[in-house]
Length: 314
Ligand code: FO1
Image 1 (tube, rainbow, N blue to C red):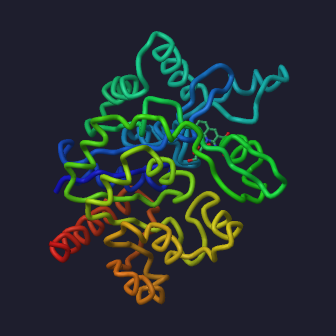
Image 2 (cartoon, protein in one colour):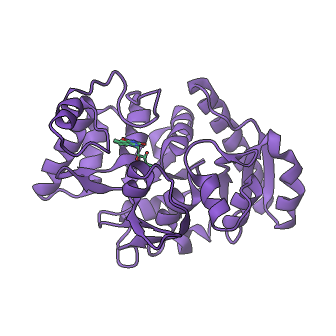
């Protein structure tokens, strides 16, 4: 079964890791959010691409989900002691990735070319595509009337400001990677991984042409919300601040217009009927991925559910 997976940060990366353990490279393509990308200390940082790639390469930091494992912080600590910029923590190993990427981009390579090169060097066989080679930047509007760059909101301000909306600056004119669009077009199934619907999956769907292709496909989403709480990050807080009670069903409703199937946690089984009323096929299981076997187990269940959805929608 050919699958195109849309992914953002840590939750998305974990499910992608499970899918990659089950599907050969010609049956799984991953399209990753770059709305979180930004320039910091003169370096081009692509947090979600790195999270997905480090996870697939077995290099991810298990404590944070982002950055590299066995990390040291000498550069960060030394810079901090000098009074330099230190609100975004770059580990020594991670720093090498940003230096390498920044240099390659400066020499004229595209983000997708550098990503392919890094994946090759890290032994990643599955195609990983940034959503675009053109810069798209997520901005968060707050109740206080501020407009914050995503990392400013997420890391520097620790997701504290109340959000009123999002803007994906550059998305209107950015071009999706043609191979990524083809991967979605040729997929039997599109999977929206358990990433933040607003700021991780939202920017990918905002890319010109992506939604039009996705609407032609069977699509299943995996909930990033369990029992009203986000598995990681501010997704539930965002739903709440935007006037929507956070729940798995709220995520299904968010994608309702094009969703075929929805995977939610067994804890949220009371929401199954509501989701069925929207003509979305729901499937409840344990969606919390604590370790690597959990990722493969959930991926297996999502793929089996995908088969069921495909048979029903034919
Ligand atoms: N997240 C934090 O909460 N604090 C950090 O200092 C931080 C540093 C960082 C460095 C590299 C990287 O790839 C990710 C990093 N993240 C950090 C995570 C990042 O902000 C988020 O994972 C995403 O942008 C949201 O998906």
